[in-house]
Amino acid sequence: MSRLRTEKSSQLSVFAVACWVLALMAMVQILIGAMALATRFEQNQEVRVVEKAVSQPVIVRVPAAAPPTAVAAGPAPMAVIPAPAPLPPPTPLEAPSVADPRAERLVNEAREARVAGDMGLAILKLEEALGQSENEAQVYYELGMVHEQMGVFDIAASHYQKVFQMGVTGAGSLYQAAAAKLRDGFEQADAMLGKMALGRVRIFNDANHPDGQRVVLTIPVSKAPGEEIDVDQVSVAVIFFNKTNRGEILQLEDHSASWAQMRWLGEPVDWSGGEETLRMDYQIPPQDAQTEHLFGGRTYYGQVVMLHYGDQILDVQAWPRDLAARIPKQDARAQGDFLLPEFQDSLPPDFDPELPLLPALPE
Image 1 (cartoon, rainbow, N blue to C red):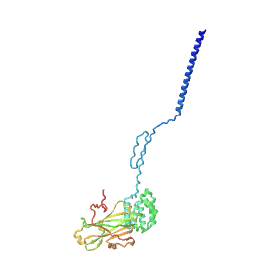
Image 2 (cartoon, rainbow, N blue to C red; image 1 turned 180 degrees about the vertical axis):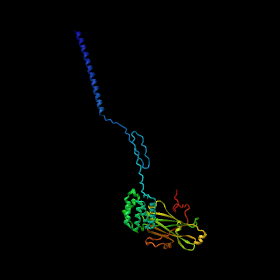
Image 3 (tube, rainbow, N blue to C red; image 1 turned 30 degrees about the horizontal axis):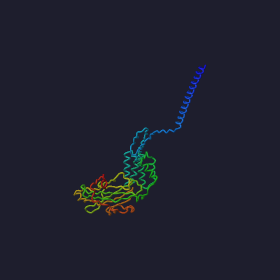
Image 4 (tube, one colour; image 1 turned 120 degrees about the horizontal axis):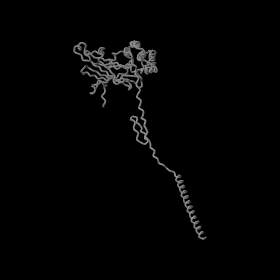
């Protein structure tokens, strides 16, 4: 009996120890779980700073005068749009040509007559040109200029109005010219006095030229600043005088007009810089002994230079001064103060007859 109690008591002790071990193990597991939860909670409360490299695009500016530059290689390249090319300058307008060749010839002849002061002949030529080819802008504009110079401003305005109504398509640059005439009105007969004048004439007298005596004139023509002029109205007339071996002073004969050649230096001739220069070459061919005995030898004596604006004389220069008495009397307002010409003893060693009387520019 006592043995049974002993065995039963022993079994109870083993069971109690096992329970305590299991309880202790459960407690340990609970503690481990609690610590793990606490550790995770603390990690979630920490602020994490993540550093991330962000690529910055490189933009290459295109210079105005350089081609587009390639974009530097990178993780996120950006395309560079080239700067737009500058627009070409507008094409300048030109006066329309006359379609009919005969009408064109008549217009040129009318223009020559107008510059020479023969307004009646100019009108006849232009009316004939209209009969040959109708609705020509150049014909109507030239008619307007002829009547404007004659002082018949109402008829001139009617012709300019016809050119204006043709528009840019039909009249080209004459459209703007006609519009300016209608907008600004017409200048009176003496409106150009004081706006243009002759400068100091330079004279080079080459008496020993192998092809006969040669005289080179350089004639500057100046325009007052800020003044508007019609270039087609400007002309320069030069009258040469010769002296015979008998002492006579004679004007250059008409049949000898080929002795004188003139041309403007520099293109275009528009007085945009305030002055333009006229070059005049006058050459007296050599004479044989028989001709010289019959008609007398001739040498250069001088000239009279006249600046015209339409049919109006703006300025006159005569050298020698006594030649002023040999031309028709002019308005005293157009005479001004006489400028003595500048004489040259020799031409520059590098003188080119096709270039102005100036030394060559250094290269």
